[in-house]
Length: 61
Image (cartoon, rainbow, N blue to C red; front, side, top):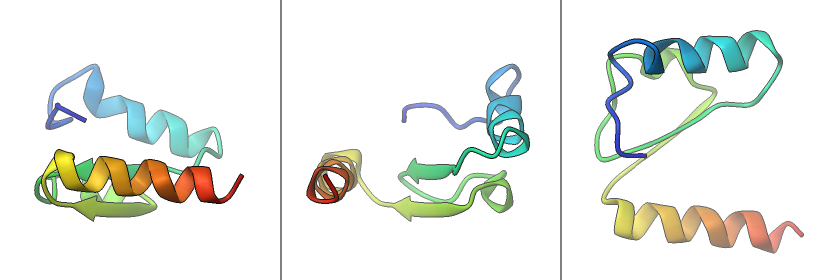
């Protein structure tokens, strides 16, 4: 949250996580250039999508 993920080293984090078998999620105002590297994506204002994401995680216990 808060980075385009288009410059290194941030640009490599998603690929590294994917290779390690970690599920990846893009939370961003709009799709990034690297959206195809993510398993899932949610787009919109952080003030809306982050609280909804946290609620989803907490509801799963």
